[in-house]
Image (cartoon, rainbow, N blue to C red; front, top):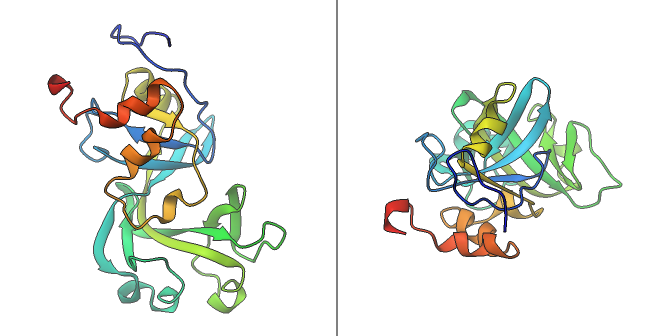
Length: 198
């Protein structure tokens, strides 16, 4: 059994927040920007945390905005909504074919997964990449803010897999991620969005 949160609800053992973990929104998530979202954490330090929502495809084709990347992005070939901050900018997540060959413009996050600078010429990176997805905006938290949200029961914190940011079925990603967790966490994948129905 886990500990209890501030409201006295039973909690599970928490994975430490670090680059590469996933935040899966709990049904109690109060912020509509993050309802049913899955966030990949990219950076964590004393100044706060930064991540990108990986399960919100938009209707905008990558080719419309980043024509040079159109043939390198994974299906569906659309921009994903990465979060409410800086939505007029974009960042790319990429998975390398080989962790020994790190191309120009690539910053590792965990293992072969990292952030790719979209200013990098495509011919310098295309042979090094196995997966690519582009996100408009990101999610950000100030010092202590994410920790408070986790303590209040807004997020499950779980390990990621390299393929998580590139799945075709974005809508069911949160439940799929929880389903593969050990023990008590797996049954949370069946909880209704309205916790009053549970």
